[in-house]
Amino acid sequence: MMNKRVLMFKCPTCGEDIHTEVDLSEMRKEEGGIYSLTIVHGTENPHIVIVYLDENGSIRGVESFDKVIALNIERTERMAMMIAGKKSSETRSVEGYSVKVSICPKLKSPDLIRKVKNPIEARILAQCDGRNTVDDIKSRTGLPMEIVLFTISKYANKKWIRYVSVIKKRTD
Image 1: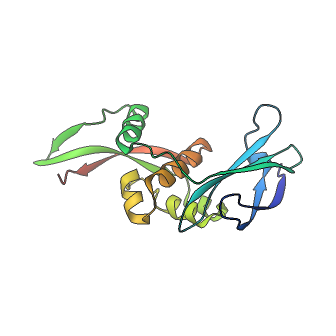
Image 2 (image 1 turned 90 degrees about the vertical axis):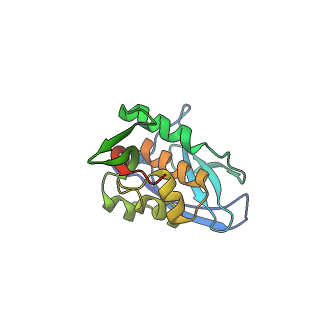
């Protein structure tokens, strides 16, 4: 059952008007009946905006964070490998080449990108093809690592992304 709402509010960080559509039936309800929607906002200085909604889709609060805590990519990849049941530094020799097992985020369906309203998030998700590591995605999009990690985590929690093991030729 779809329960769509159009939200309009000002970003507390940059003052820009934000217009977005949400489907409450796809969101996870927090304790107390409040929904939270996290948006990566801003192109020059990306920041995070969290909108809190009640059961009727009315805005109950908006907060933003202009400083995002950077996460260590090696730690994140180690965690992803543990989830996938691989060792983080697993290196093998295949047909005379030194190869490394990498964990890559993969969008379950490329059609999901059309549902994403935020162009920054859409750009990141377009790179989640099961061949690019998180570091590759950062390099290809030119976005800060914390924004890439935050977006991938957000959509992994929604079950849009899964992690796959990929064997890549070592370049170092």
